[in-house]
Image (cartoon, rainbow, N blue to C red; front, side, top):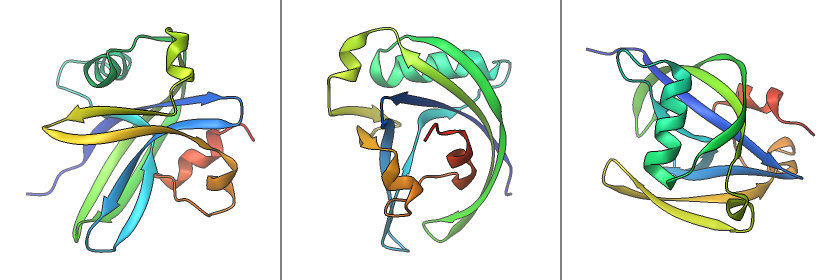
Length: 141
């Protein structure tokens, strides 16, 4: 049975850079980028989920957390349809050391990922693809 998944993402900007993780769709042979976050668990608010996800993945605490809005993301990944309701927040790292690291490796659901600081203009120009696409409206250019 297919279902709609509720997730939360934290949009972190520093100067002209955006903190995102890289994904790859093996069917489309296509790379994409997404702000960090994850699933909202039953009984958990999106704000609680945001803080938990960043702590689980990066051992990072967040500050200056501001709710941006809810996005609906209907997509195909790995040949399968997906549907998400995305609670999007702007936020900052408490530990300023995160802003000095170009790449940070982390594990989520037994898979390894890399989060990187990428120039936001690369998303605006279409050179790189940010998902969900509507998140571009919330980036400060």
